[in-house]
Length: 547
Image (cartoon, rainbow, N blue to C red):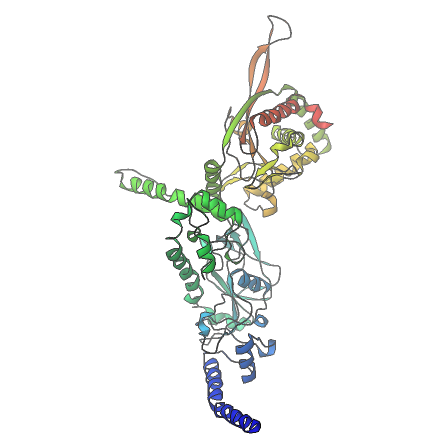
């Protein structure tokens, strides 16, 4: 009986063999009939289907631009495009979960392609050149269509939200087509800006090339679909922030956000579904919330003011487009005034001794061929030493703790034709006046040339803004540069009549007004006053800064 049952069981399996073979054959035919999607063997296709297997470089798949198919890692020869594909959230391996899955739903925005009679080429996308960058502008192309490219050569200059950065070539090839020309604005990260080829004779074939919509549709479709599901759930989130979270965790459209970003969104009653994350894998970070607060609050007034101006009879005006630096400055300063509890402390400081010491030092500098020392250089040095003496002012606020920095890095406000920049002088408390003067002039020139790099302005712990010397402003209150907790506004020096050393005798002296803007969450009034006292001591007795 046992043998008979086994024979019957095997006979049933054999009857299903033809159906299984037809199923596998149908999968293989459908896969190989899709445009240029070819595999070296049926065995590779089956292995891909069942295990997500990607053959070696000799057995690699090709990517079709028309249907947006993903290529294997072996075809992604450019490190830049490979890293960009990962940043855009695309898996590096081709995964086929079931034989009836729609392969055209898998998208990769960068890779080689050989469809519609076009040779193999690469689509270069707008890179993410800063942590908060979501879009950028093309300042200018340094390579022209048809030019040969080599690794390390500058391809173009990209204007980010903070500076203009050079984009370098990562491999050899030829620039076949420039999709976004000089001056192109608001290009989303990942959007195609150029096409490159390996062979020079392939350049002419891309003369009339336009990027396919398949690269843009998935990103556009994913944004509105999420708000439709989540906007309804988010409004009750204000009274009970944690109520709507369990439902989103269990859903397929879960929204990922860092703890501080989620807390800020709850405090400001911002639905996370309306924010596009710029962190890894679409994670919503603190900078995204800051940008949303600025742009979201500014939209209605801007529209209202525009409507008012356009309807006013006989009013002549010119609309000046926002630069990237103007946008980010507006966003950060608006966020600062809306979220940071500012208070201000002002003190008058006698600068007669400071001016005398500056004259002596400049005479010595000229004899040695060094840079002249300005009053602002002395102010930076005094502010750095005061921060080292009162470290509570060299701190930042977070929801969980106050971070006190051990480095004293001073940002210096520099006004340029392109906007306001704040390059940083690192470890200013440890540097001499000559070195500070040299670095300030260097970074200020780079700011005016619009050539600052991220390391030139990131990492500051305190800011100095001087409108006194250049513009003659007597006194003003500056806005704190987040995440810092203090900024010093320096006014101009003026002559005043003061009581002399003897009764009835009066003398003239030069006084300078400085105002310290403080974040009250970090710096209490007494601490701010203590810092100003230390700063005043260094300015009125400048020799102590040289000890």
